[in-house]
Image 1 (cartoon, rainbow, N blue to C red):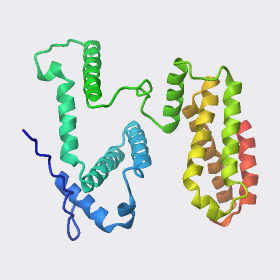
Image 2 (tube, one colour):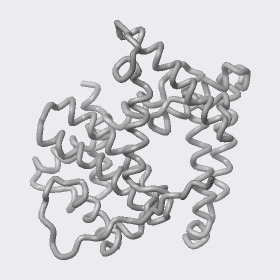
Image 3 (cartoon, rainbow, N blue to C red):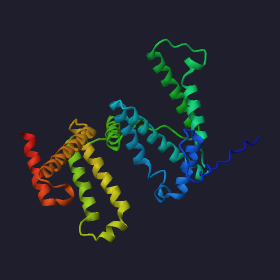
Image 4 (cartoon, one colour):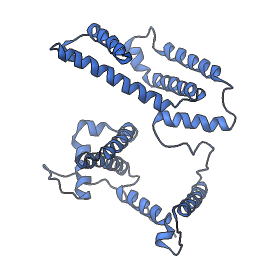
Length: 287
């Protein structure tokens, strides 16, 4: 007995200038219109949207911490946009649509909560966690039956690229795949930096642009090797990078403040003047 495969079609684009209605169907039609008529939206792919999805998740976290309702609504909407955007493109490819995503989520929530929807009775949070893990193990068995075997590094924690890099290195280290000390990690970092330089130094702009995909890979290798150095020093790469980001923002803010005090702005300053103020900002941190 054959099972008919669901026919996937992308939502119909809204016509004219729509009004905000609060209805999911209208949002899908709006997204379809953007994919049809907006040059930027038309250019995107599921792969190109990955950084935006990660960014929106972080911004939602910041908004929740701020406890500002307007900010929270806005950031939740931005996260929802990522879901709708991805679903629109997968529907265009005839793979699945948003109703399939919702159905999959509903099935998962029902399956993972037998203590709510079935006869099981779990009395505390710890028991719920144990049962949750058991159900996830059953789901993994089903994945393996579909030809998706579980590999040793599949349990890498979700998060930023730096967080994932450090975690995957830790997992590999537990399996004996690691340098003995930090010297090996530094040597690897030097090797990767030299390979990146070879792709860039003494090359024309056209040559660099023509080879940008390989350069991106070499840059990624450098970042991964630097994370390895951090791990060997028992430092968290994400925290170290965030510390640098905050330091940069603080120093750049100092430059902006000093220029404003002199009746100037960043746009009518130059790199020489900003460099002087940058050094002054470093001195200011020490006082």
